[in-house]
Length: 206
Image (cartoon, rainbow, N blue to C red):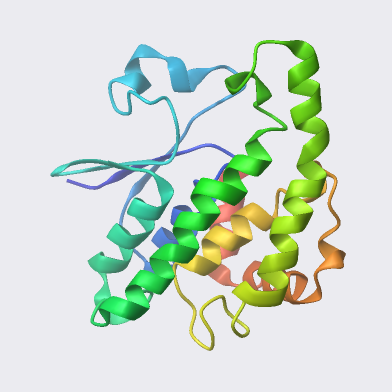
């Protein structure tokens, strides 16, 4: 069975999409139209009841959540070295990065386009949206100063943390934050954009 990868443009699904292309894995891409609310359709909810992307349908079941999917893909091709699978401490460090991007940075961004998840009151929603530039700027100050270890997130070697950071960095302009504030992050983003796998994934996202 060829895995089916469900994604939507401008979402964190870009990260595992890049990894799929980087590894050259055989898969079927399926684009979900958020503007048409396709993620809430009965057909998609049967695949991922959470109504979110990404989702990867495999012969053993469905894998969801970006950090889980990134590690799963790295394990499919251990020879590619996208995660230090033979070093428990180094792997924990990598997972800590992706977990923080997922639980903190992604959520800080989501308060702008999806404030309705946290409050029904329009004034409260506007207050949350107004806070996004500061929160995202603060998070990227730390990424610039302490998270990026080298040309790649974990140092000299490209890993599954790099596509994830790339996907979230792409949201900064819409969050009212200039990428140019963070020279090392901007350099990382440009380096990622030059990769053929990234260009192939972006072409499918539109």
